[in-house]
Image (cartoon, rainbow over all chains, first blue to last red; front, side, top):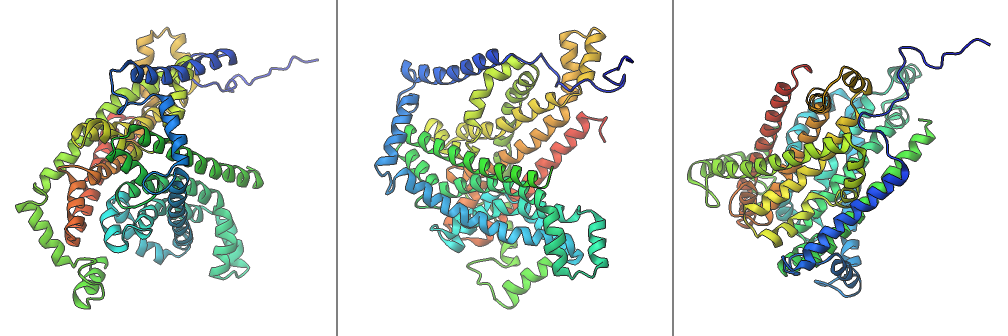
Length: 277
Length: 240
């Protein structure tokens, strides 16, 4: 039997990124655990040594205790879960609005050139305004209840929705568009049945970015204009100079943000798999 | 056209009440006032300089620490395994959520702002430097090694140039995050800066000044991004 050359002389070896060789699993695990321990160890040591007063740097255990306590006894009116629920309601509203307006707008802009020409300059000008800079107008127009924060979340979450839907619609394979045109599709059917399905991966990727920015903006908004919610809990904790409350709030924010991202990533994977990519 | 619509709605037809959104002439007056006389204890350029200075401090500190750490994590699997847990824990916390903690620790002054900006810039800088190293073509590294490159040469000639495009992507992201975070930080508590202008104008119910503040935030942010783009082209003349 002829000797088979496994690799083409110019073909690349199975790609391994630059750098030192991969670690064995045991070594990786040991170092990860060591890193984990070092992080909490350094924190605990600094807090327990008394160099910093416990009011400013509580031990990790004290933060966990406070976290648990906050879920049971209300702080500034609500328990931690209730604050999170009210934050999440605002987030869902602002993010929902951004998706409901942004995605169709992006698709329409991708199809109708005149709309693109009208909206793009305005959009580019407004995009440079940081979402958080809308805070004064949000407070002036909608107050601090639900409207103000929602406007800020919306302004954070809106651009990625528009941009990704627009890109998705712009980069549809021209032959699909031409085929649909040949078959006499109306504008409406073109958008609903050609552009929308073709841009789903791009839109979903946009949703992930948008949700991340929306959640960040929510935290910012609640720090400034709100009277409930997780950001408000942080501000009140700060006013009471209670580091453990502030840290508990930060943990809760991190967990929810992580969960939102994980959910959308799952959705993204599922959609990509269904489309065979 | 946008300006025409603005003028028609606010001045000619009064469809939007001046208490909600200002007319162009009011904005002009407000701009005149803040630029020449001063508003919220300082003039416009002083507020802008104050904000920009803080961003640059935090940004520079984050770059100095973040880029080497990201490069090291990208190159050395042991360092990566050791540093990763802390990252996984800190990464999901948005930079804005650090603001109250920074205020508790350092008060309302500039130190707290710099700390927050540092946090905002640190994570994207590290992650992108790390991915930059990972994206270097392995055969470049192997070729350099075969030609007998020393450790220092490897870092200087292969690692840094190879990772530079991603590093700059990270710097751009982190600069934008810095700017947003600083504005938020100044809105929550500050004695000068553009965020403070916004805060003061919303207390005074002064819509024209809010517009001026927002425009200043946007223009300054855009200018810094452009400047970084220029630096990027300078640093990587081989990519045009």
